Amino acid sequence: MSITRRLFSLLCLGLVALLFFGCGGATEEGEEEAEAERESISDRVQLTPEALSHLSLEYVVAEETALEPTLKVSAELMPVPDRHAEVGTLVSGRIAQVHVNVGDSVDAGTPLLDVDSPEVGRARAEFIRASAELEVARAAAAREEQLLEQRATSKREVEIAQGALKTARARFSAAQALLATLGASGRPETAPEKAARVVLTSPVTGTVVARDAHVGRAVEPGGTLVEIVDLSELWLLADVYERDLRLVAEGQDVQVSVQAYPDNSFGGVVDLIAGTIDERTRAAKVRVVLANPDGRLRPGMFATARISGTHDHEPQRALAIPASAVQTIDDHRAVFVRLGDGLFELRRVHTGERAGNQVEVLNGIAPGDEVVADGSFLLKGQLLRSTLAEEDE
Image (cartoon, rainbow, N blue to C red; front, top):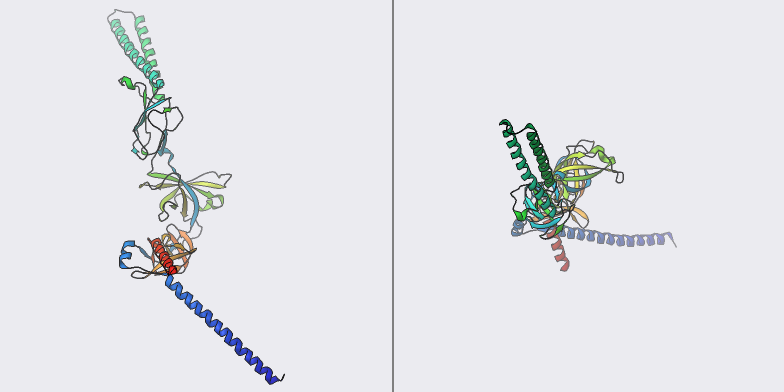
């Protein structure tokens, strides 16, 4: 084959290849543009003024702020021990009356239930007898002293009367102490039908959270019949691993989240760091005091605690927004940026450090962008419904 023919063949092959790859590139470019167009359409939400008024969205402007990195640990809520009471009977008997139910608020000293007990009946009968003997002994001692002043009796008789008075006082005190040990009062004026009755009262102010009592039930010492907790303040016990203890100190701010209220956080401070390490978990208990005025938090809830200001370095400046603004869509974190009245755009973002309610945003938005904070999950639902409607078409 001549050189001229070879050059001609190579030129033809080059033209074919150029046409092939050129068409392929154009096709791929067209597909990318179409895909971008589809994404831009599906990632935008347009709401009517009426729909927008019903959503009650709140907005924040993304801006750089000083963030203190946090330590995230698992925790559990528990009642304050001095504000928690488990009430049971100290005697065997039968429940005569129940005064409270679950959910009732009670003060210290509020009657909870009445128990009739033969043991209490015997103890009260002994108390009444000892009370009567004491009165007789007092009168006898006083009379003998008067007679001694009138020289109508001997000093020996006075000493005998005073000895009997001391014995009567001792019996009375013993009977009174026995009634108190059984949880009963020693009032001698108690009605006969209630002579064997003991009234169980609340030792704390709080809310009845459990009741295991009904009229006619036989009871024995040792069981819990009514449980009362003061829910206005709770303790949170967090597990901090040994390697992280240097980052925690008393007085640090703590933000607490629970599964029951994922869009809310509850604030507290580190109150105590345990002086020992659990040999099994290699963690120390950190106690946080939480105010709970509305009673939404419950003892036994599992929680996540974020302890602020726990790193060695100074707070860093970063682009931050409220954590409630970040949603998870298609396994990606995303936020909604307000473009205009009723028009929102979904932006994929990557997040970094979290400090309290604020979270660092590494990319996807810029300072000055207006982001939907409260109510972003409602826009997420609107976006998903719009996407499903498009697929059905």
